[in-house]
Length: 372
Image (cartoon, rainbow, N blue to C red; front, top):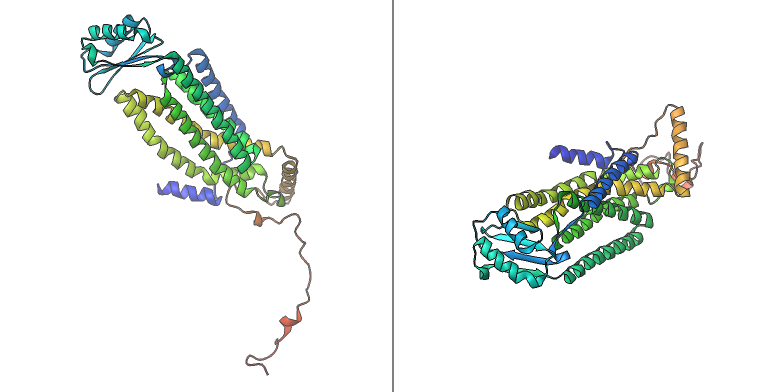
């Protein structure tokens, strides 16, 4: 831990650093490949929508000796639809059947009670109509769209439109990867999944805003110097907040991993699976996109501005002159300040002797003591 703290301090002071923006094409390529894989998984396999979105019924039984595989066979024979069965902690079963007509739920319930050898009255049935499921899906999409619009408006006001666009691209990147993983793994999409998605979007946005705030502060007077380009300062911002981003991501992923692999995998809790998978994938994707996607994309957009193009030209020309003289003006990645470089509009220094003010000449040559 002490080594990690030392590394963070050295990154913040600019003693070491990594050129994230300079290698942005590599990160873009990796992100495109992952996104294409996620889209293919979504297209080929599709999402396993829960009954909350397509309607159906959930039957919860008391303790029984029937195995999960047997219960699935019984439920599919009784309903004529695919069934998902989970073993509960009390020894009972949770039988989920999607797409059935709610009017047939009593018949299915009686048949399940007979096959599972339990009392029909002890089976609890929760029914969801298809129209209600459609409303839930529409509300989820509306909430996501409103969230995106508000994010763009806020970032455009608080920072600038280029940062708003970069943050939006990063958020879409995170959503696509998370949804694609859901399609590939085959986990069921439930309201818990939607909650997890909205949570990771907020976390990803927080991580991005931290870097953007540092970038905005460090580029306030960037055109008044000729040592750093906008991309150089963007690298400084990423490196100065890198260890903080890693620490917060790891701390957030540890409990989520516990929910996913212990709560969902060992205990077999369905709702924990729905929430924890979206959180785990989304947190990792959000930390990645804030460092490797959002900030390099802002640098790409800013470098297209005429002022930044002119600045880059001046910086490269000054570095070429320094290299010809055998000097080095390569920028530190982090920790430097613009005061290290002379502004273009600074008044030239006066060469030669200067006339001293008369007040400063008084008393010179006198012995120390009281004046007479």
